[in-house]
Amino acid sequence: MSRFKIIFSGPAGAGKSAAIAAISDVTPVNALADADAADRNRASATNVGMEHGTTLLSDGSTLHLYGTTGEEPLEAARDTLMAGSTGLVLLIDGSREDPLADLVQFVGTFERFIAGTGLAIGVTHADRAGSLPLKEMAELLQQSGFGTVPVFEVDARDRRDVSMLIEALLNLNDPVAQP
Image (tube, rainbow, N blue to C red; front, side, top):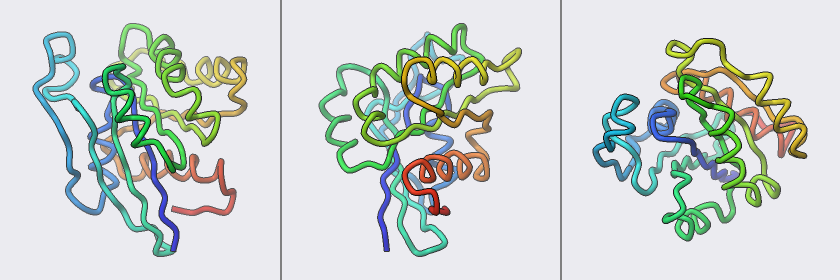
């Protein structure tokens, strides 16, 4: 049986905690604190460290799910967490002022990690956004040398949507992987 380790990241309120809770077979362990004033309209709590959940895949493999922020003070802990990981699921809040800027920031933060693993993008909060820049995100990543990156509109609370992101990420590394 295989063990996979997937990292979830993105700006505050993008849905990292919701995505891990949606897919985890156990209640996720997390380090949440009240959101600061700037993020309170997006989420009442925010991740101040990491969170962890697990799920069993149909072939008996275990999938470990870790949520982390992109904040610089947590860089050392994040680097340790990413060791041995399969890849990154990056959640971008499509309703934020400039989701493309968020994408650039987070891809820059995780650039070395992504280069050695894989990346799948989930754009959340379509219900609060005008039009989502899915095509623009995919083109920006292509032009930046990341190749073809799967970019999907997702509801981070929906197990099927989160499963689709994970499946896309696993398929980048192993085309026959099936979550």
